Length: 369
Ligand code: M6R
Image 1 (tube, rainbow, N blue to C red):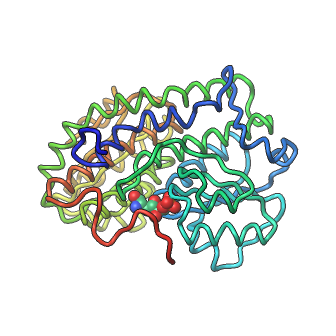
Image 2: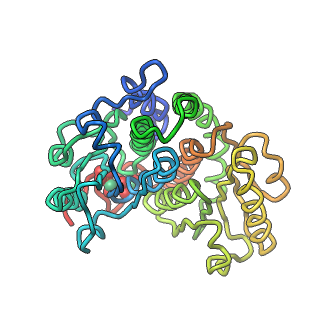
Image 3: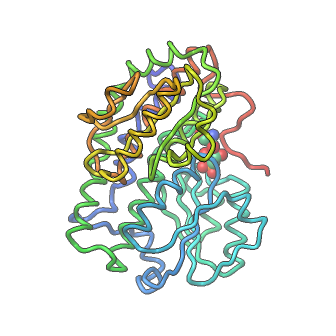
């Protein structure tokens, strides 16, 4: 049931505040993150972890890449993020002090399932982040943190993605508490930021009409580039994936710092480039670097669509279009920056008359290699 929406995707994009709120529910008590599912491991095991390996495919892997920044910063544990199908066909070094975290909306992705089995046989501990109760991957794992995004029907993942990042941030804060890697005060600040996310996503959704207009103007576009830095980098790649799968447009996400190492050669007059701009307050060291990237590509004729914090005046003179997102601490910007990119891909797909819920050649759950 599309509940009055024109597509399942439109409905699911709009449900993102609830997807985050429902995933938080029951896991924060008196301002403290306690993920009951993690207590199965025992605090000593979590405190003794030397390494975390995240395995996933597609959008779920971008959730993992996004969360790597928070897990390392808060819990102080090194994190590797790897595509499941690459992981299982090399000889990854795993041990008892390694925790392998799999992420899968469906819980049935064959590559991720086989990677989890491999990890268990190699002696690692395994935990699954999954949106589907009783699916195969959680059954094959030592523990599971369910995301409570509700059923996701559209092939393109949206609300499951923000719910996955939510679950991973809860995991990171639980770990940080057990490992005493953050002070009580810092834990409280990050927990409050996480609780503020649903309302901020709701505010971001108000940009939908202007993004629809933008997508209509751009319906003839042949290629789109996405630039991001720090946590904006995996979001740039997720924005590109959404555009590929929904609008069949060639799209690439790049780390903004890589521009000079190759991608800037792609810039020619009229080339649309989405730039996820870090906050001038929270990321004062990175913000000017990204603004200067914008100037560099604009000088070569790029058409800039900036996703920037409300009140960021520095980008205004250089951007053709600015999409505003609410103020948030740097690690929480991904929850907001991804929303306009999802809406843009969806609206471009609709403008081209494509099937937004069932893009060609794709299946919701990839149960074959
Ligand atoms: O069910 P999973 O989360 O394991 O699926 C992983 C990918 O197949 C999935 O995220 C895919 O990339 C989506 N179509 C992205 O929108």
